[in-house]
Length: 232
Image (tube, rainbow, N blue to C red; front, side):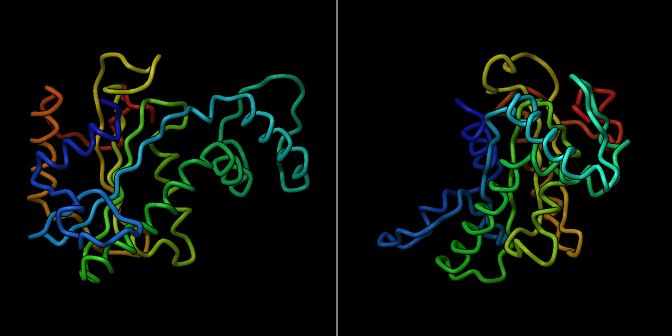
C-alpha cells in the first residue's frame, strides 16, 4: 500500500464512498476520489512521492534565483550553506518555497480541476471540496506545504478547494522514510473562506485512522506538533 491508497482507505473507513459509484457510467472526464453523500463533501487525494526540496536540482534553482534577486535582498551565496527561510525577505522566501514546492502547487491546481469537474458531473455545485494531501516527513515541512497551498489559492484561484486536510506520516512512505513514528493530521481552510469540514467527519477520520493504521487518534495544538516529531 502506498500513501495515496492509505489515505483512500482511511476516508472509506470514515464513511466515504468511491466517486465512481455515483458518477454516470458513461462519464470519462476528470474525477475526484471520495464522496461523503450526506455531508455533501467531495475529496481529492494527492500524495507527495519525491523529496524535491532535498534535491540538488532545487538547490541549484534556488541559488540561481538568489543571484538574480540580490537587489531585493536575496543573499549572496558562496559554496554550500543552509538558508533559513525566516531570515529572508518575504518575497525571496516565497519564491524559494515555490521552487522547492513546485509539486505541491501543481497538485493543488490539479486537485482543483478534479473537484470542479466532479461537482458538475455529480450535480452537486454546492458540495464542499476537500484536498487531502498526504506526505512523508520530507524536508519540505508541514507549514511550508500549508503556505504553498494557500499560495495556489491567492487572488481567488482554486475556488473548488474549500479546505486542506494535511497528513504527514511515515506510514506507507517510500524508502528511506518508511519507518516508525507519529502521524500528524490538520485541517486548513481558505484564507478567504469560512467552510469547515463538519466536526462529526473530523472525528470519524480520527477513528478511521486509528482503525486502519493502529495509531490511535489524539488531540494536540498544531503549534506543538514539532514536540512530537512533526517536521514543523
